[in-house]
Length: 186
Image (cartoon, rainbow, N blue to C red; front, side):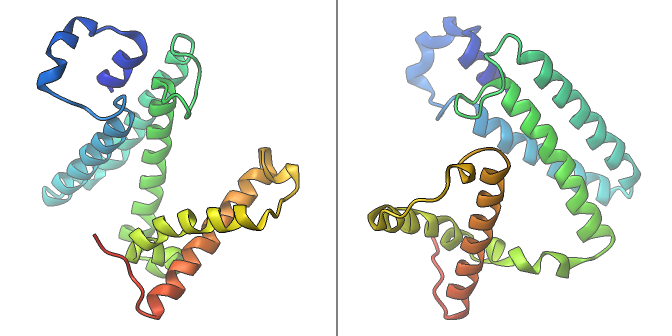
């Protein structure tokens, strides 16, 4: 997160003389998301091992509240909330949202053991790389067909609905490919 903040504010510009000795891809946003996931996963595993799971819920809630508040505070000085620019406020708010989603999934799957609730998106987890690649095949084909869709599906609620439907179709397509033993692996 500090690297992302520095990228936008230039606080650590004096370190640039050593940049040739180390390299970090991007502006720190993806690394911040990754490290947040690692921290919460390690916290979960350690609390589970020590049989202190009752500390997990308040810990994650507190962390999510702190990150969300920091995100809304930082937006005034970091250029707003922008995914396109990976602003620190966007990183902090999205991390807070991801923590809340993690808590929901943790509760539904690990505590209530409702694994079957997520079968409709299972191919996204079992055939991840194929699911990732399919849109890169779809978009060029779609572009060649020169077929359009109404403007209201490009923004706002219509855009969100279109994205959800598109994602669901791509996941189901990956599932169909998996059933006929087409699965990409690295």
